[in-house]
Image: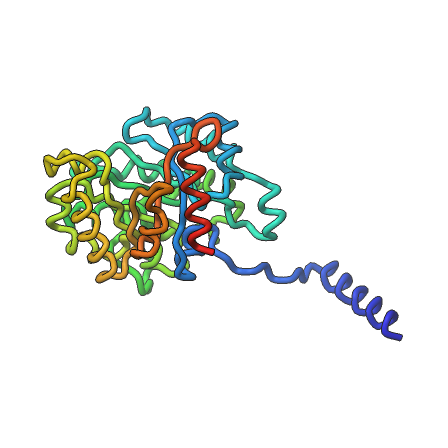
Length: 312
């Protein structure tokens, strides 16, 4: 009798599905970084200047949470971005998960500084399917606000989240195809988190100058800022007139971290195998562990393994 009941039950389920009433998919963020942050977890990732399809495929299965495409100091090429995203589209990963969440979140560091207009670059990057934009050298609250506005669509009448007022134009057909969602679903998700809890886009604001450090609290207070990232290895030391391993840089990092905690903003920075556990314990929730090109470098691989061990 039990066997018969099971068979009948399966037949009924098959009948329902056959009538077009498919089970509702599990609701998850398309952006795996947002999914982890929403659960209070940290994320570990890598950066790359190798935009080959082979490298994209390797990164997609690297075990990292995100990859940051470096185009601040590398040539800006949207065709390259599009091809790289195609290479990262790992169908086997979607089948294992059973949903459309990307296996690894793609971010782009753009060449435009905060004092310049980033709008057109951001629009094209997001229209291709990017889930995060890293804005270099943001020095003021006004520059941070402009960065957030460039990522947002204009608010619909009656929307409870109107500010900062979006300026992004419509035309994200490639992003919809890459993410596997309809136009309506993409529009729902194409907003900055956590300003919009349903959003899947991340605004990464770089603090890498003496002026930005001075204004860090005002910058962190801007609605729609997802994360502050400390540029501790390059521009910040140059701006402060010190070396990257000086006490002043560590003090600057801690200053930004405290501001992030006070304003409930994710804090990000660089880490290696030797200090990734320390940074995680301090409260850093976005750690860039090194570069990838034809696979992870040994240093990045060691840092990723150490970070995973520390978060178990």
